[in-house]
Image 1 (cartoon, one colour):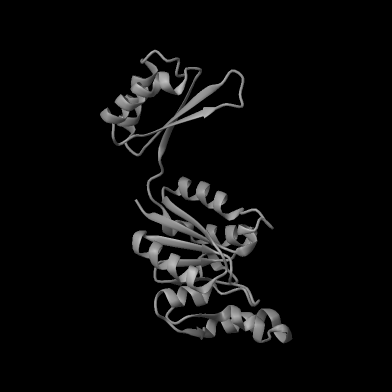
Image 2 (tube, helix red, strand yellow; image 1 turned 45 degrees about the vertical axis):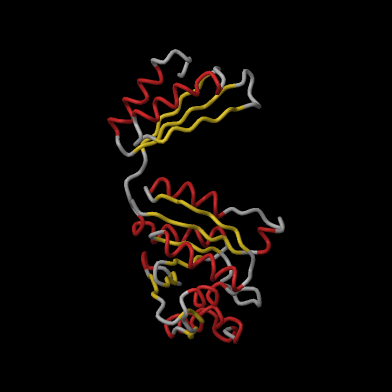
Length: 236
């Protein structure tokens, strides 16, 4: 399955000025696509931090998604950080310059053209007939930080990240985790291709434990589910 990492860039997230909306949305969306998200990092608007995290994730995963830091202001340095990660220079991409000039007209000043200054050799993805393309550097997709724009752009290119979605089962019991632990351990031993999660909900009355099963192997998922239901812990 395709794997992915996410780099959320912005001092405003780390300082609590704005909540992160892009991470939760991408977690859900990638799951439905069958693309396994394996790491999320939230880092400041700092050149070395961006470059370091991009290098790490690019080497580990099929895809890296960055969010934020692609506007015209002084703290928008994501393109520079990605360029540093791969030892590339920056250049004004002629297609991006043309789009900005056509859209902004007389307002297309030096600050606006900063948004067209991307790592040398960047690809532009025009999927879905977008007005402004997505910039991609090697396996790094550079998304805007504004949630509505990110979602719009992601949906246009989502077909590129499709894998096999996970199949899931969810059971609930009033038994405690210590009471069901041995049964879950045995199920995990028998069906290693099934990911089993156990999550107490202490704010509910009565207190319950939610057990989740996830797998791309339907036969294993069904067998594991049947085993847990027959174990006598009230997993329903």
